[in-house]
Image (cartoon, rainbow, N blue to C red; front, side, top):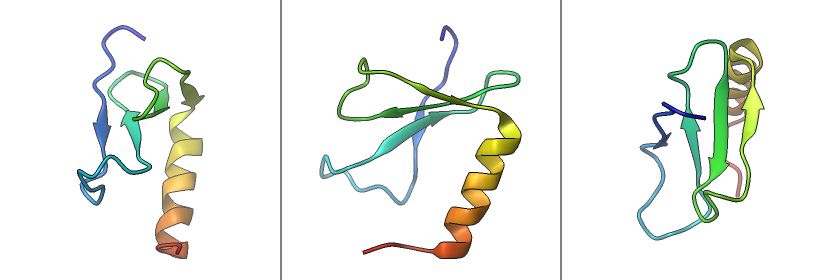
Length: 64
């Protein structure tokens, strides 16, 4: 989507591992993509669904 400003978590390392990028600057939509395959597709979420996912991920904590 035109105008998407992509960012990755500050907790992501710089070692080329498994990261995702998020663009949440567009009205009414949050985009998510794989940093290793930026042209491979984008997931689209509504802001409320994305906020729910982030809240759940924070509650569960790190995996592994």
